Length: 214
Image 1 (cartoon, helix red, strand yellow):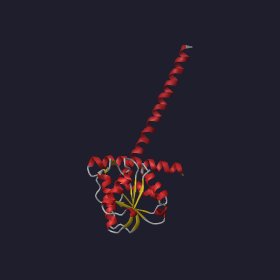
Image 2 (cartoon, helix red, strand yellow; image 1 turned 180 degrees about the horizontal axis):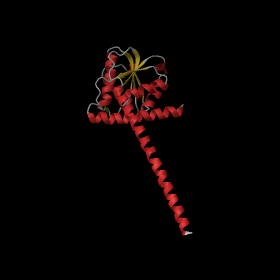
Image 3 (cartoon, rainbow, N blue to C red; image 1 turned 60 degrees about the vertical axis):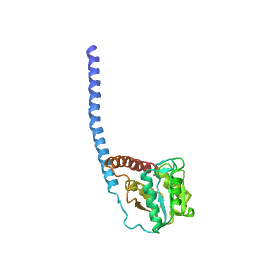
Image 4 (cartoon, rainbow, N blue to C red; image 1 turned 60 degrees about the horizontal axis):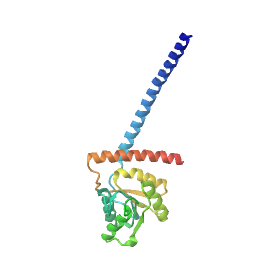
């Protein structure tokens, strides 16, 4: 009787060990697959067009929000605002649409204040002050200002951000043209690696979200 019980225990232990051995290669292969996908997408994000030599004429430039410190934009957001002002002065766009809610005051209002201080009339400035991420930036901008679906718009952000942003804009029915900031403030190797990793995760998560919606 004892021998029979021992045999059953040994058989059960052997079966569990076999299951673990089978699972290990599967998990290893899944890990390698994810690493390959992540690395490829990170490369694509870094290779996305970093400059737009001659931006086309557009009615509106949509400026994606970024962090602020009180009433002051961080260097990254400042770069986006400055490029939007440059395009406005050059006559490339007639109006500027600033987006973003986080902060007190909201990011969009910080950008609006700077634009007005630089001579842009209030009538040429639109703001969206409820969004907290890129998808909301564009979705709420579309809801508030439906005219941006009827004509090409320039989408201003840092080069590493624009691959995802342009795809989101297209999914929302916007005819958006990438307008990467020519002097990105994400310059150091450490900053680029950090931003690329974060943006790659965000891009992959968006792909999951859009498939679940469909």
